[in-house]
Image (tube, rainbow, N blue to C red; front, top):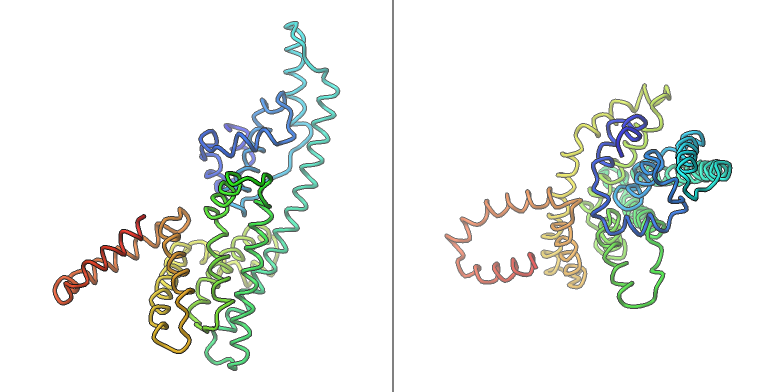
Length: 340
């Protein structure tokens, strides 16, 4: 990507610049399906712009992509066209190249404005989810209001993450089993699949566990703080009231992720205890532990979950070896399923 990306992107774009696109099998398909002509793809600025769009679609949906300027996309093409003409090769004339570059720049601007509107709508829904989730978990609120806030926050997160999954992956184009498997693998390995399944499980359940709102609040807080810091830095209202809280969230994001992971793991044990109550749901408990297994292996949550499970193992293993050695075989069987 080189100088084209470093001159127009801030420091938080280093992750997109360091991403290995050539080893990702989706990059070749995405490049082939794009409307960028091959002679324009040799321009480092055009290549960087396409890579940033790929990074936002498949890696980080919140990664912003700037529009392309028509001059930056046409001048290298014209010079390359002149060089190929002087060499006697069969090349396209510069005027159609400039026309294509201008059209692609206009299309990029229109897509950028549409994507910004989608991100603004996503931010509005997340801000609403954050407010109703705080109402649902607030102990002094009326019980009926807490229940409504609990349901609405889970439903809002389910809708936003479900729409994000549909917008990025749509439905498989081919109807064969191989295409469906590849599509399912892409969806389950995405960033929004875990919160979608998490909220879908609890919004359809009869259990009312306030602890389930902690991950919802963390997800909404992360999205809201990131959006405010990127798009409202010039607002006096943001500078007066919201800059310090958003900065605190950005600085302590690791602590927020650990808080969310602790709540997710604790919910798994609470669901096991709920099997001994009247509101037991064995299917939901089994599906949630399948989701915890996915969180343990997913690259977006594996670091936090593995650290917590390692700490849990170091704490309880000495007591199991000393007082309940008969649990060794069931625990080993569970670990084989967990690491499968």
